[in-house]
Each structure stands twice: as C-alpha cells, then as structure tokens.
Length: 248
Image (cartoon, rainbow, N blue to C red; front, side, top):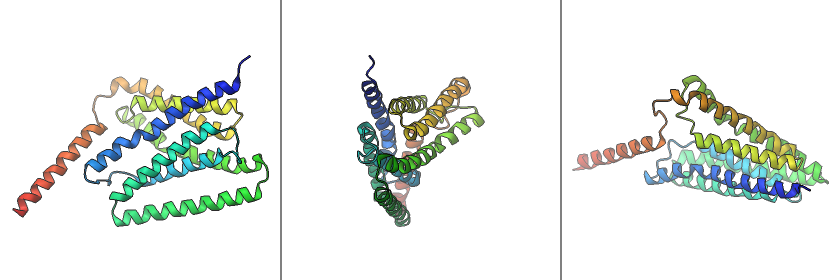
C-alpha cells in the first residue's frame, strides 16, 4: 500500500530545497552591491518587501494552531522570511536616508496590518477551518501576485523573441518548485497552497516552452548580469580615479 504521507514528505523536502535555493538566488545581487561600496540604486526594495510578507503569510498559515501538519511549509517559508529580512537589512545599511525612511515605513505598516489581521482571525476563529481559511485566501492572493514579475518577463520574451533575460535554470527551478508544492498540496488536500503554486507551475511550463521556441533566435547578450556588474565596477573605478586626479 502506498504511504501518501511519506510521498508527501518526500515532495515537501524537495520543494524545500528548491524554494530555499530560489530565495537565495539574489545573494549575488546583494554581494555585488556590497562589493561596489553599497551601490543599491539598481535594487528594487519593494519586491523584497513583498517577498518578505509573502513568506510571513505562508509561515502563519502553516502554524500548528492554524493549519497543522505543515512543518515542511514552515521550514521553507521560514527560511525564506529570514533570507529576505537579511536582504532588506543590507539594503537599509547602504540606502539613502529617504529610501530608508520609505522602506522602514512600509515594513512597519505591513507588520502592523498583519499583526491586527492575525489577532482578529485568532480571536474570532475557534476551529482550524475558520482560522486557516482567511490566511489561505490571503496566501492565494499574495502568492499569485508574486508571479507578476515572471509574467512581465514572459511578455518581454514574447515581444523581443529572445530568452537572454530568462535564464533556463531559473525557469526550470520555478517549474519544479511549483510542481513539488502542487503534489505536496494535493496529497494534503490543501487548495490554498495548491492554487498559487498551480499558477506558478503553469507559468513555468509556458516559460520553458518559450525558451525552446526562442532559444535559437537569441544572439545578443542583452541581460548578462556578470557583464553589467563588471562594467559598473569599471565605471565606478574610473570615477574614483577622476576624483583623485581632480583633487591632485
């Protein structure tokens, strides 16, 4: 007889590994920012704020007194929450005072709203279903909302007929991540986890199809992050050299 809980645990562990890898995929971006003496102008902090709140809601949804039996959901999104808090801390360390004020205000406002929502749901909900449903609906909304950057990237590929801005490994990882979480959710009869990850799986499969279609027509390296980083480093070094000459 097939042990559904064991299969669910296996796919949950695989999803954990892939999810944490995707959460950590921005580490090189922040490393380059630190290496370039805190150049964070090209980093969009609001995306990382949204990802922080996204991870936090999935953590709250997976808590034992809200939706029991989701330890693997807690480990994946709990790690993601910590990673994105670290990203925001690095950004705030090097951001201008105006940027820092905006990000901190959004961060605190978001946590205040989430805290009020959490207290209201826990206070009024007396069963697992009445507690998990509100959090699950929010997870569907914000989880699906987080796929908008990928959808915009997909549209860019269709317009330019080039996949240079859509790395194959990232598209493949997103697809496998959605697949594993969908299986995990299906075996646990969890529609709130299934819906956003099902959207991610469908989008990932479409991206892979686009990659196969337009791969041969991609000739220019219009989105080579390493080359852009090296170019920025050279420009920064040249600017500092010019300043030293001017002072001399």
